[in-house]
Length: 106
Image (tube, rainbow, N blue to C red; front, side, top):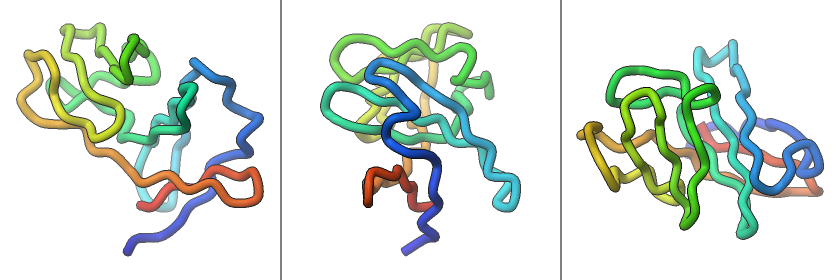
């Protein structure tokens, strides 16, 4: 089990929004996405060409994230590739809500 890192309160990210968090001590950037059914966290980098998803990522219907850098589409729930050109999945992180705070396991 990894470290549980607090990102924000649940009210700081509205449904349909995404937000980047720099975890400087760990050298990781996390992208947090909030949908109707909850929060999803992933590395803020497309595995295809390294484009920052906080800038190029677009939340699509059906729990999908499209990287508009080259058009790759990923499933937010598990990071799997739905459409290429990406071959590798997104690195995802487990999200936990505790006392109205959002935590990720790194």
